[in-house]
Length: 253
Image: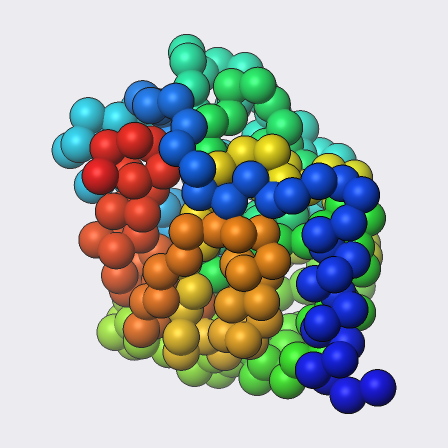
């Protein structure tokens, strides 16, 4: 079976018994935004976006994802959501797309925003899905020290943060948080995008997640989708575009 047929079957499976994706139908206006980082990063990667959200009058909080077990990562988001007063937009970058897909069923979550992020179906083997697309170059740059992984410097600068000034990328490399290897085998039990308005920012120059895989996931969820000419770190290289999408999800276009 060729890749086109595989994708067609996956799309049909995604539209099955769990109901139709919620897409980007308007949700209640939100005053809070919770932002979750993925692998090779920490919460500071959202700083430029946060400044823009605060300037627009939103309450923004970046989660410090422990990158240990999937359950602990989800719990870290749930704790922050519990502190929010009223409707909240939940935003995930990269691997954190899995986390917001799981935690996003919280009744406080009014919309989901995926930034070059994984967007699995409930119970889906994301690695198997990713293998139906070209392997992104960054995958070869992951270095493991026992049970903990990180992205090597050359791959980080070229394949993760390729459109950032080298000096800025080196600072980000220095603060990347190692992740626990077992995290790579995690599967979600929820697909919150099936019941919540969803938005997706595709990074067209991405070398960490294949851009066509991003487009496939965005289309499958029926998300309002924008294409950003950016590396995997669009939230840093293109913060205006990412902040604007979040503001739209919050009902403040």
